[in-house]
Length: 345
Image 1: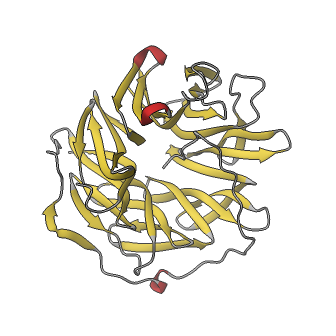
Image 2: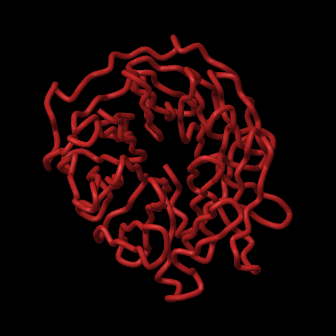
Image 3: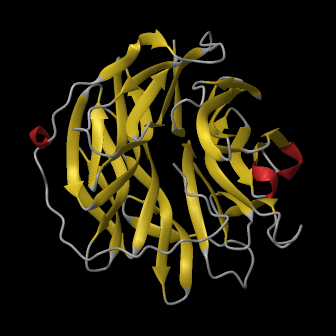
């Protein structure tokens, strides 16, 4: 899930060393929610199977077409942060306590201790997970390929990963003397992105998409700007220099479908969830007191995952298909949506 950038949180992380743990260290039996569909609304899966990863009552979970599945975590606090599907297999990235993990269907695989997994994808049978590990730096942007760790940069965070052919793309940010910079890595080589406002010292890349030879990165800056880059070309969706400090925006996901670019995001004023199609003129407001977390597209259909406010807190998991909302939980348990994937039928 892309972080909420209405305010910037710098990581203060205890120095510790990373080690691998065997997945047998955590055992649990995955459970469905009584074998029943727990949706409040009606799921329209006619276009594709809809998968949403997140948290249900303090534990990692995912929904397939509204049906809730709890992921094994040994009873510890856990979170599902990313999801993808390859054939009949479901892959979910996440965390169990301080362990970076992923699940393949019902099997838990531990990647590293004192580490956090943020995104997952697959390609040609290989599993790629982005995240960061803590240590003396005090944290480093990394990704794992089939469990093998690659360090991208120290004092950096990786938030999203995509693979195109033999190329691995990771979006995130780096910290240095000149400030925090929106960054993506292609096969380990860093590309710093220009946020377009010369005075900005804090920027970030929230999500990445690859279409042919073009790389699209959604992100923003400390001023509350929402924007995306197509290669080196910047498109500002909402300027943080306008509208006052109470009208800040952020992005949460990006997807390309045909000739169109869709970016999900949020506005701080009234907690508005929204998405943009191509540019600022393509703004679509989804609702108040809600937040988006991820976006997907299948053909001409656009799917956005999010969380809605219940009794002053963000409790209800929902998604929008072409702007039409569907609630997946009823607010009886705290629940959060972090990632969405739509698989063709």
